[in-house]
Length: 441
Image (cartoon, rainbow, N blue to C red; front, side, top):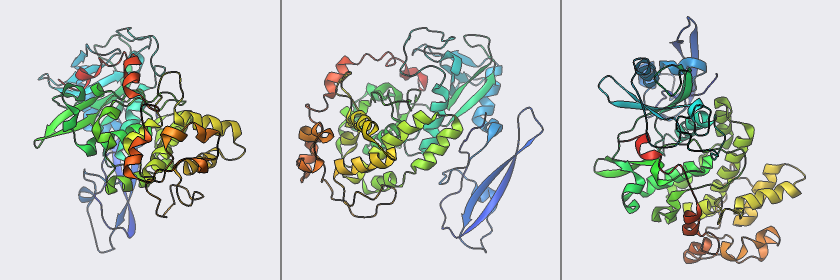
C-alpha cells in the first residue's frame, strides 16, 4: 500500500533557494532502498545546514514518505515487536476491537485498532453494534487521515501520532494477520466529560473544532477528547476519528457546541490559519491514504463553509451549526444548500457552491474565491439565520435581514434554528462508552 506520512521536517526559515536532500531507508523484509526526496528552502547559498540540523521535530513543512517506510518510525517498530512478544491487551470499553500495546514493563505505548475488528466487522470481538455510522473497514485510514490533516497545521489540534500498521500477528480476537491504525498512547487525567469544560483553553477548543469541520466529524463527543495537564494548564487531545469523512453529507456531531469557548470569536492568528488552509493539498493527502473521492468531496464542502464563515466573522459555534441538523429528520443548512445546487447546477458545481456561499454570507466582491480574495470583508454582514435560513433557498438573498451588530450576530443560532439540547436527548450514541480507556487510564 502506498501511503503518505509526515516524519520530520525543517523549522521555519526564510526562503530563497531550494536544495534537495535524499534519505535512504531500508525497507522491512527487503533489500530495497527507499528514496525520500524532501525539498527545503535555504536563506542563501552561503548557508550550509547539515541534514541533522534541517530535519528536526517541531516541523513546519510536511515530509511525504511513500510505501513501507513507515516501518522505520520508532513507534511502529516498537509496537510490532511488543505485539510479537504478546504485549497486547483488549480494551474492555467501546464497541469494537481496540487494543493497548504494552512494553515488557506493562507500560502502554500505543493503541491498535485492527480493520477486521472495527465495529460491525466480521471479527468484531464485542458484536455490540449492527449499524455503525460508516461501514466497517475504513476506520484505519480515517484515523491516519486525521493525523495527516492536522499535521498540515503543524499539529494545531494535537492529534496523536498515527500510522497504518500492517500484517501483524498477536493475541487478538482471531489468529488472522491484522492491519489497522496505530496511535501513540497519551497519558491523561481523563476525558473532557469528566470535568467542567469551562476550564479548557479557548484555542484548544477552536483548533479541535476546526479539525472536526474539515473532516466532517460525525462523532465528536466528550469521551474522545482527552485531557492532560501541562505546566499547570489543562490541555485537550482529540482521538478516535473513525467516523469522519463520510461519502455523503449526514449529521455532523460536535459536543463542543455546548461549550462557551465555541461562541468566542476566532483570534486573528486563527483566522489567518483558516484562510491558508489548502483544500487541494488536503485532497491529495487523502487520496494517497486511500480515501474515496466522494469522501474528499465532503471534506471540500465542509472546509469551504468553514473558510467562508470565518471570513464573514462568524464564530465556531455559528459555522458548525450550519452543518448540524436540528433533529434527525430535518436536513442541515449545508445539506439543503448542496441539494439545491445539485438540482439546478448547469456548470461547475463548486463554482456554484462558492457563489452561493458568498451570497449567503453577503461577502464583498463575491466573484472572488476564498483562496484568492484579499478584499476586506464586511464583518458581521451576514444573513440573520433566525429569519432567513429557510427563505434563502427560495427567495432573493438580498431581501433578507442583515446583521449589523455583534449582539445580533449572537442570534444567528437560536432555539428556532439549532436546538442542541433537544438533539442531545434524541441522539442514541452507542459509542459514548468507548473512549475513556482507549487512550488513557
